[in-house]
Amino acid sequence: MTTDRGRSDGANGPVANHGGGLYEIKVKGHLDEHWLEWFDGMTLRYEAHEKTGLDLTVLRGTFADQPALHGLLTKIRDLNLTLMSVIKLDPAGPERSPRRRASRSKRRA
Image (tube, rainbow, N blue to C red; front, side, top):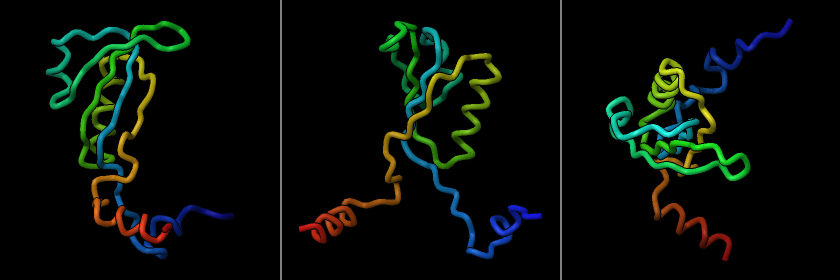
């Protein structure tokens, strides 16, 4: 019988808690400005879904790590909002510096 024990016992080193960065979260419906107090520090805008025409509210904000993001997702669930999507807008993460990107592009040249 195999288990996932090897993943959590540190045999391959500690698992980094990545996931901080800028995220865009879409929920179904049109949330007005009073909802901003529930989503402290996030911006709010509206759009219609391309295919269905459904009204969507787009929340955008920065999270320090995955636990912070999951906290907001829990709040969305607890408020009985319908989650449509979660997208990380800066997939490189905050730890990547412009200098590192520049050195990477030099290798391609």
